[in-house]
Image (cartoon, rainbow, N blue to C red):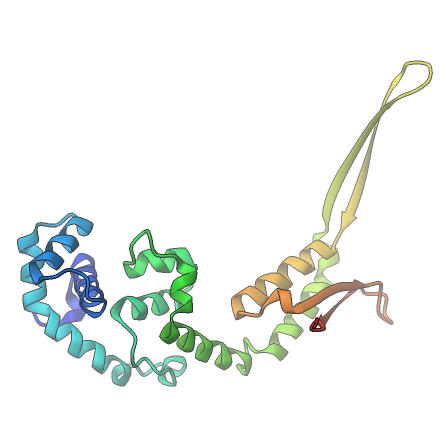
Length: 233
């Protein structure tokens, strides 16, 4: 079987791990690499050796050809050169909606590897930045589209109010225990949650912005204002 796309999950993981070990010069000999991979995948060393011997060259060729074969609009402009197998699988997982930790596990990184360190790798950071730049000007997901979506959420927020119950207890001078419960309705929580979610998805840094609630606009609707923070010297 020479078609890499038909390999099992474990076979692909073995190839990726071998490439990563080879590039990072982990393991003095091939046998050391086979054993380490076998232990991680709980697979016999001889089986790992067979997989690497039979499919590794095809896997490398497949990786080189992947950018040429990719025809999707959003992927066509990405520069995938220089990415290791692990990095490539990580980015594909992130594009598929996986969180950082889920993408790390899906790609086959070891438990000791931190997801934040993966995203700091030059090639990974570059590729993710390219994706975010595309999103910024995208008709459906760009800045203008996000603001329009947030405005809609603000107008709808009154229909989905959040309620906080505040209970206070005290004793009167004649010894009676009094309990009072105050219901506080807050629609802004819905707006803020939607705003933060959009910012997170698009990679905006909440620390670089001030988010504050204005009282009302001309029509009496509550508004949210986003202001860039002033840099302190």
